[in-house]
Image 1 (cartoon, one colour):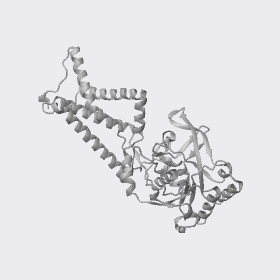
Image 2 (spheres, helix red, strand yellow):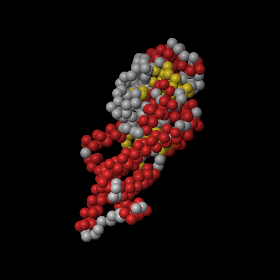
Image 3 (cartoon, rainbow, N blue to C red):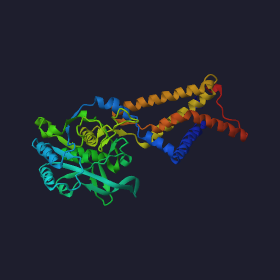
Image 4 (cartoon, rainbow, N blue to C red):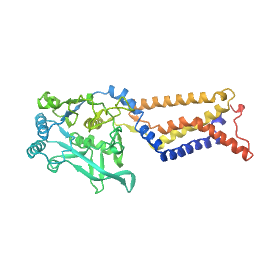
Length: 414
């Protein structure tokens, strides 16, 4: 048995599997229809199952964050909301709204007055026109920083509200965030969530920034949708339909939640999240942008960060499983009893391995906040059985061609 698992033939077979996978990958990149399939699969993540079915439903609500809907209110009416909220001494107010151009002068003056009388105010910004850093192509430098109207921007701090999806497509899932982005002119812009936490608890904000050194992307630990935060609809604020303790000392986020926050519609500022119960072909998007920011803030405040394995370890795991399967399937294909049943037995083994790995991934993600990226291992397991058969045929044919006997495992080696 020792010779079966530890021999030079298994090493060459393992190399063959990875070389074939690389070749198939190059072919896939050159075929448009395979690229389309790849994009769909890329936007599905096994850990989404953990969020939607296990993690979020068991998580407690975060009472430090209040999400307020301003719907389609005018600037004057939003100013009225802010003035009412300020009466109850919130710790920070963050407003996820562009407010770029000039509107009615009177309305703009009312909004300016409300902003000026808010002690800790964070407004919208956005970084655009990104391109690879010439010193590191994995990093992005941004040419442009867009801010709210100048007369509003000078009254507050600002943080970027960009959705970190590939190209910010509305049909992709928003899973990741960062603490800071850099512009080509040397400036840096903190994220909307980071800037808000800096005003609320600077020590916790710095811990998040320190985690994100070297442009590290952070996986968002979603607490939940609106059900996990204190929420006030448009008229709840305008009619003062809340108790003072709801606002006092809390982080208040004003954002667009539709005409009513209970509505389930397609909206401009609504995204897919990992909490969506239909990960494929889902409609409509399930989480408003301001609620994603609430989740990021909650993650920073509670330090519930999700850790990932280093890339070298993901490769080591894939190589380990590949080698084990190469040895095992090579032995099965030549076995007197199992050989005739190789196709069925190998498929059962592959299925059990994949199911087992999914359970392991979910366990570590739910219980330890560790994301195991085993995509490469899954591919290795799925392809190993067939590729081993191809490899053995190639070895046998080459051995015959060059007059050498193929290396076969004998029964007395078992």
